[in-house]
Structures are given as C-alpha cells and as structure tokens.
Amino acid sequence: MQNSGKLFLIPSFLGEDNPTIIPDQVKHVINELNEFIVENAKSARRFLRAVGYKKNFDTEVTMHELDKHAAQQDCNILLKNVLRGTACGLISEAGNPCIADPGGELVAFAHQHDIEVIPLVGPSSILLALIASGFNGQQFAFNGYLPIKEPERSKKIKHLETLARTGATQIFMETPFRNQKLFEELLKTCSDISRLCIACDLTLASQYIKTQTIKDWKAEKIDFNKRYCIFLFG
Image (cartoon, rainbow, N blue to C red):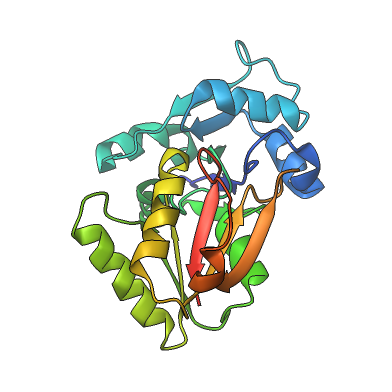
C-alpha cells in the first residue's frame, strides 16, 4: 500500500501583514512545502512572501483554490499528490483553517484516507477574544454568524444571552460591514445587566478589547463598522 502524505494546517495573519505573529516553526514548515490549498491565490502568495517564502510561484509551486463547498470528488483532486505521499499546506485567509473558514471537508477526507493531519500554532481570533474577555474559559461555545433576517436574528441573540447566564460563554461574529448594526441590535435587544465583550482588530495596532454590561455599552460612542470583531456573552 502506498504511503499517504501530510496535510499541514497553516495559520495566517488576522489582518494586516504581521510576520512576527507567525512562529518560526511554522515559517520553517512553510518553506519546505511546494504545494498549497488556499481560499484566494493572490492573498495567499502575499502572505507567503510576507513570512519569507522564497520559492518561485510560477515554476516551483502548485497552488489550488478551495471551494467553500468542496465535495469528496473535489477533495480527491485537491489532495491527489498528498495521497501519493507528498506534503501540502492548507492556508486560511485569516487565523486558523477550518474555524469559521472552509477546509473542514478537506481535513475529514484526509482522515478517511490515512493522510497525516498536522495543525500548526498561530493566532486565533476566537481564542484570543475568549481569554481576554474575563468570561468562563472552561465552558464555551462558538456560534459563528448570527441569522441575517428578523425575527430570527433577535431570537438568536436572546437565546445566546440566556445560555450565557447558565455559565457557558457564548461567542459569535459578524461580517465587518455589518458589525455596527449588530452592536446596535445587541444594545436594543439585551438586558442592561447582561455582560458583553467586544474584541476588535486583534493583534493589530488598532486592537480594542472591552467587557462591560449592556447598560455601560450604551454610554459608549464607538464605531465598529468595517472592523474585525468577535462578540461574547458571559
């Protein structure tokens, strides 16, 4: 039986280029690879160059763009060389692959075909927000994106608010251009005594992290529009 290869899960920056946040061990692994699976080839090439990758993209590197809804057949094609024993890196657009990012189907396929899956250490906005919130780190849930339409959105907010009162931190997010609207909806929907943490622009120079009650948030004059935010109830 032919030996399968390795799939490295490669973390990337959470915003603007910040090479120092990527550990040297990750950079070393990256520089050994000739094949990558990415969400967007252009941004992936920019990331690789920023962390010191020297190989020629035209002659030495194979780069595949990953469909967010990759099917088993797609995975078979994407990991064709890895199934034959080579190594490949899966790169997220921000933070870690497979968390609020595509790639889960690819990793599941790798396990099914005895491909070694190797996660590498790097920045995770979800975990950074959790540890900086002051909320329960023993019991928590990441809920991804909330519903866009009403009344489902308000119902979901109230549900998460209620769950947080049982002691389990509830983590959620929104696309940057809808952050301000979500913030305003939280202030309108939630009880004044509920505690909300907003962790914004993590690892960037504009980083902002604050935990306080909804009542206190109502006194704040902050614009979160087009900024990368993680929201937490605790």
